[in-house]
Image (cartoon, rainbow, N blue to C red; front, side, top):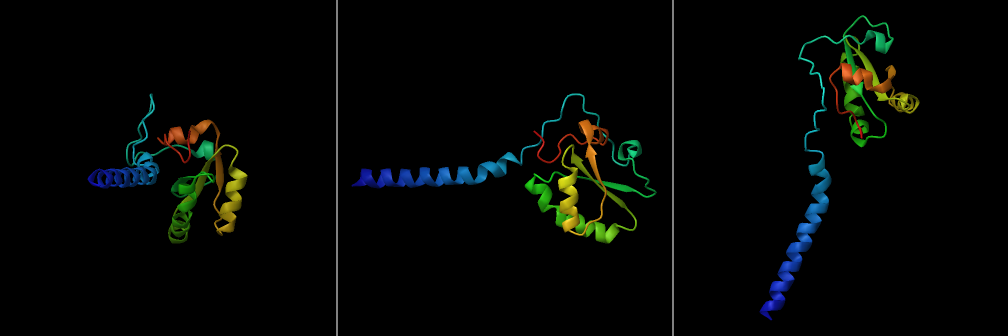
Length: 141
């Protein structure tokens, strides 16, 4: 009788540990830092980044680059925060959404649905991300 109780307790313990592992594995995956690529050039806080020729936009105020991927759940989740920033600081700051090449049309539709009139720039060859010191963009593989 005692051995059955021990076996049952071990089974419940293993089942609980298995369920916890299944639940927490995706969470742990995103808490690990992204490895810094070889040749990475850090951008110092406050350092200006020249991106006008890449953006091809006439902008006369500070620019906030919003790196976005419509296929990334985290990116889509953060859209409500972007909308709040645009409504609060839109008069003083130019907002530009930067997306991986080939996803600009899809992104423009999403922003339009939210009522956000923000330029969308496709980041060809990740040049803009590299110049800004961004080495991990949404859903980058």
